[in-house]
Image 1 (cartoon, helix red, strand yellow):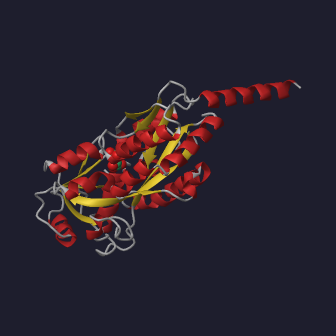
Image 2 (image 1 turned 90 degrees about the vertical axis):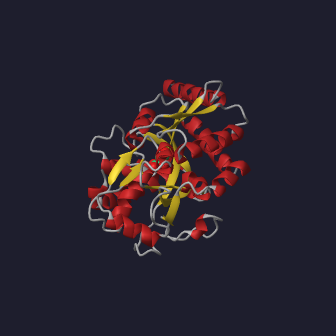
Length: 328
Ligand code: MLT
């Protein structure tokens, strides 16, 4: 009888918590990169759509906690109070970090509750405006002719831009690793590229489309297996496979996470709000314009998203291990 009473009380308090959640206390969406980059962009657009999805009462705030390729922000959320008021919006770095950090302060599959996947975003290889190349062929020849003299920007070990850079240098059999210049995110990295302080970068279309269109950077190729034929601007750039890099296929995905132990009723509310937000007309329009593809398959379900990340961890480890010489 006593056990039944305890269970009933627990269920009541869970239900009550869910009924009052999120209440007036803000819900922080931690972005583990600097403001102004692609991850930050997705988070701010999604926060607005989720606020609407929860009836306009939820106060979602984006909190940028950058450093160490996104692992500092991810660690903060892994260790946060699991009350539903601290979430993490992250990306493929959740799957890349285990292969790059010997002492990761969190376990991607054990220390988080998975809320669902958000989108998939292609990447573009871009260069500073002064780079003496206009086609991908010229670009690759220039890089090879200046081996050891050029630098590549990224957002820290395990970031999407870092992962793309090491995969691409490995795929072109670069004689020696380029000098890598890490930033708190590809927002600040893009400023350095536009200003000519760094030579090149691989970054998500959500951050590069506007700069390419404005002619502030040069674009050479996209990293997806198939051309981005539906995008008015990106359709003009070849895939790396078309440029001879067999099997090169890199798309960045974003997902939403909460600390392990967040109440199931709160998780269910957040997953429902996420599903509604992904169908928000304004969010869809913004994502489409930036070359991002909103997830419409089962990966929006927490367990499917988690299984997908587990598979990505297994897939990326040999890829990263094989390109370790370019991983600095
Ligand atoms: C990355 O390279 O992981 C992201 O572009 C970082 C960011 O969102 O700034």
